[in-house]
Length: 296
Image 1 (cartoon, one colour):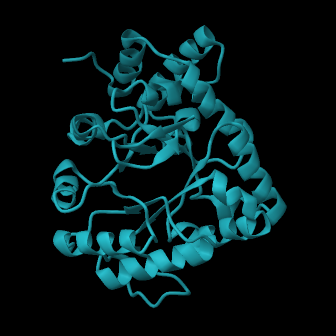
Image 2 (cartoon, rainbow, N blue to C red):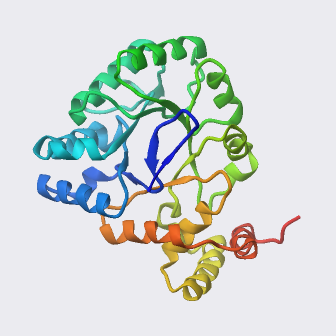
Image 3 (tube, rainbow, N blue to C red):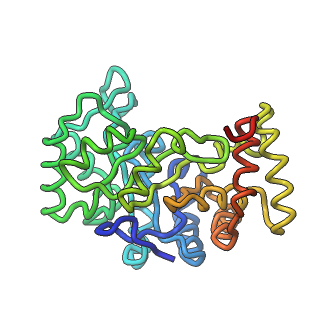
């Protein structure tokens, strides 16, 4: 179930396990190992991290599991992100800000490798657009890290089409990790998904369930979308979450949804979407439900 993200990019699983909330799941080391093993059994072999997740703790928690079960390293692909400096008890920053300087990116890559207990990241993303980014200098950092074998491939996260192009002109990027769900459509209209399709790269989709808003939101859009999800879930004999994932997977840029749950049942709902192909009309029913009006 691994697919090439770009013509010269890494192979990742169709569904990616997001580790953003790993510290909140309160899993002991054996439970973390079991989570990785059960994800692999479902065909989910790629795990999405960031240096800042869990107040800079999630990569270390994941690495502790790999240290006890080192045989898992050869079976998984590790994605991480850097470029955001968050205020923390362990960091002296006075305010949250961005940094894509060579010194900072290199330091964070080294920290991620040490925390995860691996020699190479399969994919490194710049987490947010840095308005002070020197594209040529950052591209040079990428080349050095790749030559040293510390990072195999590079991409970005939350970048506009123009911001992506600025860096991609200097160094070939393999993905743009974007927010996308049946309740969040900006990437459908801002050119980012079109750019991915044009360049034959597969985007990664974070918050595919709208941060839980699909199931508990009481705003008009959430209520309208949930009603349509319920109808389609009955038609396909699956969960609402599975239909929500299928809506993302239906886009021709072929996004890789990133889960956010520590429950294996939730991962099963995501992988079940690989067997559901919504029709054009069904896809647009959900689009219309979110927008609250018919197509133009």
